[in-house]
Image (cartoon, rainbow, N blue to C red; front, top):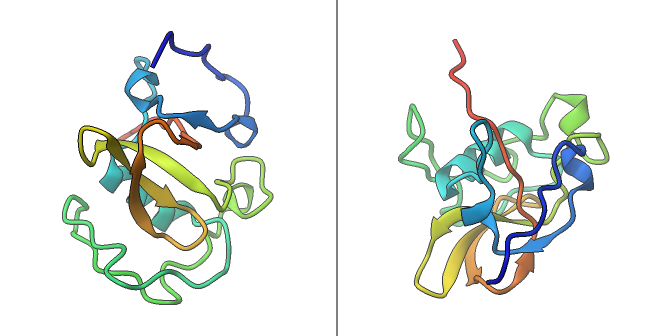
Length: 138
């Protein structure tokens, strides 16, 4: 895929441009590109819009504690955190985001932040990527 592109940090996440498959090279000591199940949890916690969710088996996450079940049209609802709501400074765009999880030799997993859909796409396709920091809460 060529040389890694310069890191967009510390710009606000909402201003990061879309990049082709770069999650395997987007990693530092404090941030990483989330795996498929982590990205699903981010959708649950930071859903930017108040639109309906895609409900056909999307949202099942056996890696979550406790494991989660498929979305309903209304759940998860839009995040209560204003900065993560649509148009907020930290909001996910209602767009496709790469996960670091491989689907096959040529494809990777994506999460759509418009309605929660997860799907695969060719690794050379240009979609967004969002680096995150994981911390234990509680």
